[in-house]
Image (cartoon, rainbow, N blue to C red; front, side):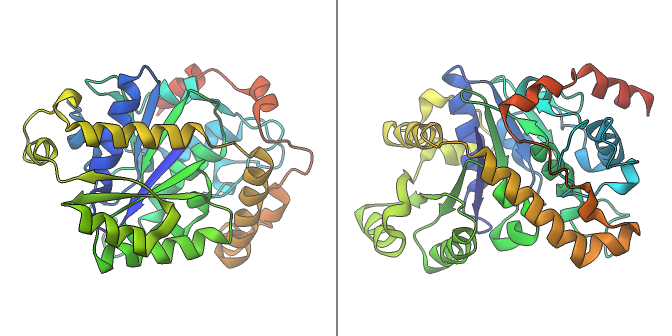
Length: 328
């Protein structure tokens, strides 16, 4: 199951992403966390001893691996971030994603991937969404199931809508402070998401009392599923001190459990997933990708391909991806 954490900059979405990933791991669930925010802080908050190798720097290798023997994609150069899988593509099981040679393991057993930060060569000439494209491709080719968890810390605000990545999740958790700015981002996100059937659940953060909860309920309504009270334990973690999940206040631990229950309750809709992947690919093809590649990328859509678990018979072992990494 896939969950994205979004919200206004400074809302605490990275902290919530990390706490949720750690909570799921503590319950025995296998977890892959992905830092897709322009501010790459998830490794720090998760307590990783090292940073993952940036996916953005390995985009060509990832493309070459995923295209496999798909006759509609003659080369990695012909792929863009929205290129959907087809017959012959290499699809990923959750185990393949978790075994990525670009990932590191956190002290809690979470496998962590990251898009990577802006480098000096990117400044003034590149869009951050070009790096996030690696995540979109991986999720487009991922065939995951119940009891397998992918937690993505997205870029702040409504920037998530600059690509089709926002449709790649079973649930989107919007982290909202009890302020007008916080709920303003919620309204913007909910309006965009509604047109694509994206399920949005709101978790309040930095809540100081009943009046904050009342404010969120009045502004967000039924989308508010839980809230995090102001936490001395979380503040200590943000200041660099170790946090054991047992240090969390009981009400905040309960909030993490509620979010996991919400995620597990979602029904994965592979047909919609496939339709949206193709829709956003066509949008990008018309808007810029056909001109960029000099090809009609609508031809990459395979009408005979079916998304979902039956496709896992065509998943290649992750060792193939390791060979790509070693070869570079």
